[in-house]
Length: 171
Image (cartoon, rainbow, N blue to C red; front, side, top):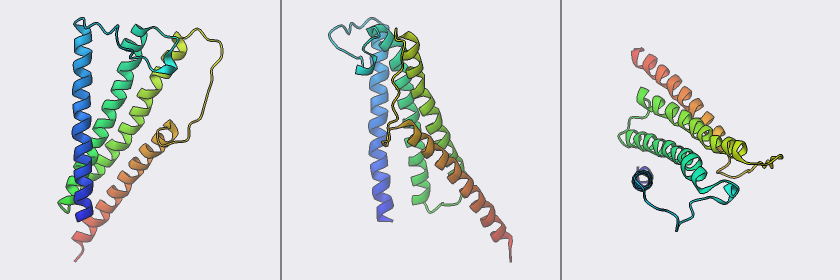
């Protein structure tokens, strides 16, 4: 139970810091909308060097921000699951639903991260595409696999819940 408490504490710290990040970035976008001049700052990632600052600021960055929001929702659901586990509520319908939502949120986040790549290609004045296949924890393939894993895990929890309910009815 002590390890679960430590996991709960670390997820809570991550979740609160992510919420603070969402609030700060939202505030920055509201300030930009009302005319904050950002000419002194460079908000352009290096892989979008051929795009203008406005293209990156108003087309690419909102999708990256939206992808970050999906990850915050994943953290929120994971926090809820850990809270349920801490309360000794392992095989409940809510747990299976939260695992399924986490899987779907991972898939949506990967899709949201893919949109700037397509926009970058459409806005770029290039005739060739350089493709790479990253193999780290941040790669899209890994995140899709994690999403599918959580969806499969939700099915396992649903099956365990069905077996538990049948077992409770058996005398």
